[in-house]
Image 1 (cartoon, rainbow, N blue to C red):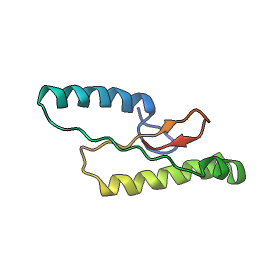
Image 2 (cartoon, one colour):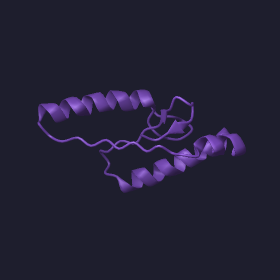
Image 3 (cartoon, rainbow, N blue to C red):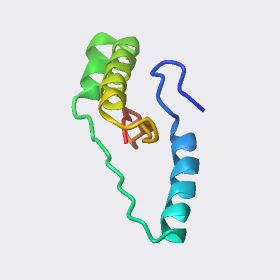
Image 4 (cartoon, rainbow, N blue to C red):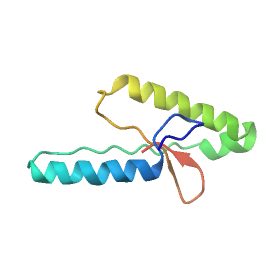
Length: 88
């Protein structure tokens, strides 16, 4: 599914797609690349400006990432242990 606040795939959707892509890469003996971004400072954005501001930051980052990637590439949001969203 898609996170309605950021427009990015949810962690659950990302994991489902990642499992499928890893199986396909193994099946076809092709390389697979995954990039995870740890967005330092998100907790302070959420604390000082509110969660809506934090979600707007994530949505903006997602737009930039999607604009720089191929249509078949995946951008998703994951929640870290601290409860602060990050984009894997």
